[in-house]
Every structure is written in C-alpha cells, then in structure tokens.
Length: 281
View 1 (cartoon, rainbow, N blue to C red):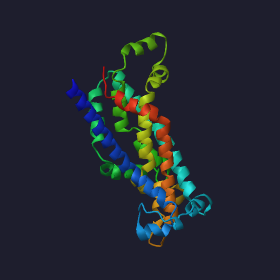
View 2: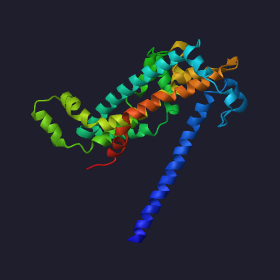
View 3: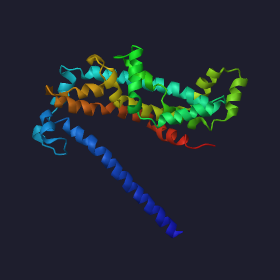
View 4: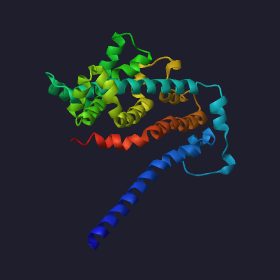
C-alpha cells in the first residue's frame, strides 16, 4: 500500500516537472517577443531576439507607431479577423453537418466516403496546392477572400472529430425528435448542436489558430495589398528595399492577442471537447 502511494507521488511529481518545463518552453518565446516590442527595431537586426533588458533603450515608441503611425497594419489585422471568423463559422457548420451524417445515418457508400475523408487527412496542403490554384483560377476567384475560405470549408480533420464525437449519440434521441414532429434540420439545430458545444469549442480553437496563422495559401491567391492578411502584411515589412522592424516586432506580439482571447473564451469546454470524442459508449 505504501509502495503504491510512493509510486503515485513520484508520478505526480514527474508530471508536475514535465508540464513545468513545457510551460517554460512555451512562455519564453512569447516573453522574448514581448521584450523586443519595447526595444528599437534596429536591435532585432543587430542583436536578434534575446532576453536581455537594457532599460535605457526600452520605450513605448513601437506601440506609438503601431497605433498612430502611417501603415496598413490595422487593415491587415481586420482582414485576418474577418477571414478567421468566417472560416471558423463556415467550417464548423459544414463539417458538423457532414460528421453528423456519418454518425447518425446509414446510407449506401457511407464507409467508402469515410475512407476518402481519412485519406484526405493524410494529404498535405502542398500536394494539392496546384490543383486548388488552377481551380480557383478557372472559377475566377483569384485575389478574393472567397478563394482563401472556400477550399477548406469541409475540413477533413474537423469532420472526423465531429463524427467520432457523435458516435455515442443515442438513436432514441433522434427518434424522440421525429415523434415530436421535428424535421431532420430541426433535430440537428435544436437537439444536436446544444450537445456539441464542447466539440464546437475545441474545433473553434484549432480551426481559428489555423485560419489566423495561414500564410502559404493566401500568399498564392491574394495579389492586392489591401486584401493582405496579417501574416502576409507582416512579411512585406522586410524586403530588399527597406525594412520596418519596429512595426514588425510590436505587430507580431499584438497578433498573439486574438488567439489568446479565443482560447480564454472557449477553454472551459476545450478539454471536455477534446476528450469526449475519444470515448465511445
């Protein structure tokens, strides 16, 4: 009994140490960019990112530049916010429909279609970029926000997650809804969606992070500077003809805030949503 208690204590201590190390590894880069946001932009080029603090060189000049300077940062920021919201909402809705269909209904070719979903999970974006690019060009959608959002609305990993989450759904719930006279859409929106709140929260965070940090695909389809996302816009601050490290550093730090807010809003459901789909009754 005592030996088992000692083992449990040791395991707890090891977990605490492990997660402490992981937390430090995550916090250090954020802390480093936070410090850099108070330093002159030239220091990034001269000394790189570092943890050193020289109080004589620390100031709020970069933040003054961010909020009052002549630049397009807030245009890029707004574009990214709008695209992230639209992408997350549309992806969750479409993927929830598809995942619910796989979990709740029986139809011809169901297993074959689900195998296709699993195969898509194993294909990286780089493999399908050229066909997607040609498709967007043939549809006349280049240099538009639609071209950024549309190819990823039915997200394979989100569909898979929702399907796994709903596999334990009691069929009696659906039958009760039908007996009460609800349509199939009524059952989905009134009965299923409330049940899926933890799953929606988990996928909102993951899809929101992917949409916010998306760089390669917008780089291919967007041409106009007024339609740049934040990742594209920040990249243009460094070029062979000049640089703006001051705006780059403070803008990069400020770009973390929306994702942090997103996680804070949904974190209470995040763990529940990530674990519930792995348990099937």
